[in-house]
View 1 (tube, rainbow, N blue to C red):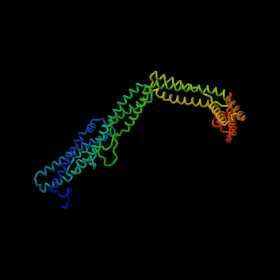
View 2: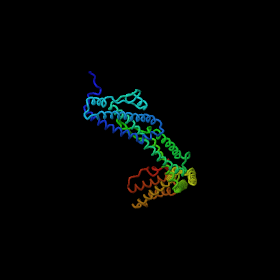
View 3: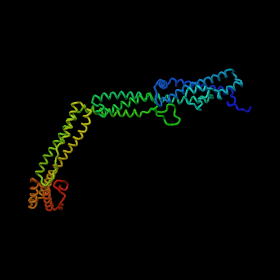
Length: 445
């Protein structure tokens, strides 16, 4: 008297029938899910794998959870069968039947032996695995099964996703690595002799270790998706190490391609190098000859010294030819690139030397042209016989056409002729300075 039934008010027949229909549908859905989990390829792989690390720990828990799931499901099945048996006694259930059904369907009527949960070593909601038995309502039992199923499926799907993605990709990359190693060996790229050879050895070691780790501990390479309500298996395989080594192998392949290119066009590049260095030598020889001419023809001028061709380039060129004869393509490749840059620099230096050396002759030619241009202008105005102009023209011409020629004095003589011509023609007087020697170095202090 006065004690409230924990199952609540007694259910009527319609409520019982609806509850049984709902529980039956849930039972069918749970059974389907458990069978699918039992047959999941990832679960079968986990059962037979030699696991380590995080995966070993989580699989021990998941395997126990799956065992416990079946124990819960069996208890759930028994309870549902008992409820159906009671309901099937009579078409119109009695008050006593309805009270029993209410207790069975709503109360904590399902008993699971405590030894089952303890042996399963699986997580429970209330930490009661040490009891002799545990009692659940059907609703609580369904919630417990859903929780265990979600955590178990999450672990199985994550491991299977990593195993499906990474080992196959690693194997493909390893096959490509072996092809690259054979190609590298054919062109002399070997460990200890070329950086690319050392890189291939390192990539081989990393890929071998990575595959072993992925196979034994796939969950170490799983990145969970962000969010609290992530579905089981929400996430992606962590391919950071794989991607890094794939990029490194691609870099090595490009290096090997460069070496192969060297093998194909080495002779042409060596011929071009010899031609560039020969042109540089001829230009320097021309500069040395021109320097002697300038020193003989131009007075009071500092002419830069012309250095000889650098012997080191010729020595390196001979080394490159030797590398080609002995098919040492991996050594020839960087040497040719360096030599090509240096040879172009040497040709440019030779041309600059020739320009600097012949500068005084260019200044003299410019002064000669200016003197003759003013004489032609004077002649067009009928002043070619003017005595002052004739005198100053002859003086300037003697200086410019005599050797050695003092450019500073000759420039002043040309300016005096220009000034005289300007006065005779009625033009403004030219400034005393501003000739070619103001724009050029030779002949100036």
